[in-house]
Amino acid sequence: MRFSFGAFKSLAIAQLAPFVPSAIGQLSSVIGLGITLPGGPSSNNWNKVPVEITIKDAKNDTYIQIPVIPETIDYGDGNAISDTVKVLNLGNVDFHSGVELDTLIFSSFFPGRYDAGYCAMVNIKKPIEYRNWFSAWKDESLVLQVIIPAYDINKTMKVSSFTWKAQGFEGDIAYSVTFKEHKVVIPRQVETGGTLPEKGKKVPEERPAAAATAGG
Image 1 (cartoon, one colour):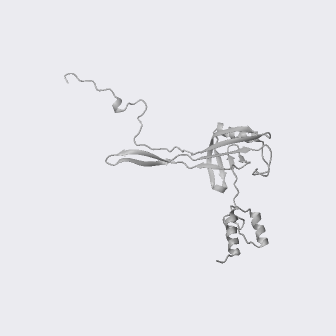
Image 2 (cartoon, rainbow, N blue to C red):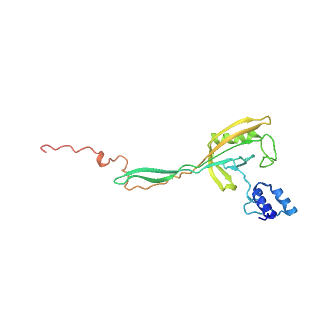
Image 3 (tube, rainbow, N blue to C red):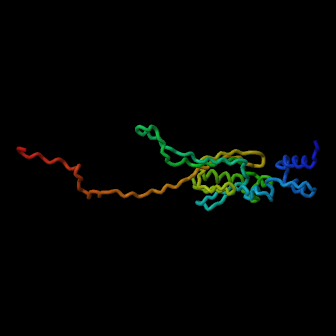
């Protein structure tokens, strides 16, 4: 059996490529290894949309960008709602009657100082300012627009819960927030048949019975 070093090198590169940083991949092209790493700038799998979370407060004309992107974002797609009705000779039947409200939950922290290693932008606010915004949104039940372009989220929501705690000696504030979908209900005018009786006049069922006549 003949050993092929070239085949062994190709196999080894294929196994290690997903774990090699892109900088190493670029260096490999210089020394002749010819590695094309998945997820690199030239790959179709490269995510060109950075993860950003923006919250629009239309009432106060304010846009807030989350300074530190959370590690995970939990989105709860509202479950379907069904009304179960018992039908004669058929049994129980479910009738679809809408969906529950969507929820969005994440945890992160408001940094006491800017650090390029984890901050999403340079001009960050004081942690207490972010905390006050979130607390006001919750307490006043303000309607917000939560926008996360990387995951195609642009949802009208409200803050249903917000908890926080002081963290570290730099004044960081760790927090958890839950948003719940907001739906607008518009009352619809419905016309009914018939006319209302004039003021002072009684409808037939309200009139007293006629007095019996003598000898009747």
